[in-house]
Length: 151
Image 1 (cartoon, helix red, strand yellow):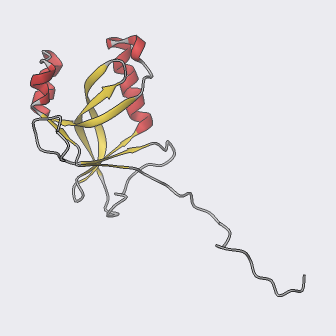
Image 2 (cartoon, rainbow, N blue to C red; image 1 turned 135 degrees about the vertical axis):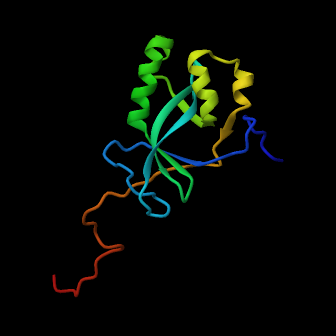
């Protein structure tokens, strides 16, 4: 059985939320091509608050259609927005759901639309990926070391 989509637009983009504050993604983790900066209107569901449309400049790989956001930067922007909107929700958990049409997001900055109407201009992510980083350095060889018995 197919999963029901939330938004009115077809799924678009893949997404990675980088949890590592000491790792920056200047190259795409999939194709190793250089990424560039691009602003996306992200729809974020914040626990005990609800959806928030936030314009966020993220790394983007146009070849893979991959949006890469750094968690520490996103946390700071969400907390800044929530201190004005709902101070009780500052620091709550959140999930980035997808992107909105830029024109609708910009219109919503001046006069907000009902959620049902805004969701007609929302596209979920095709795929949400997990970033795993193995630190560089020297590591022991795999398996037990063999000795010649003279030890």
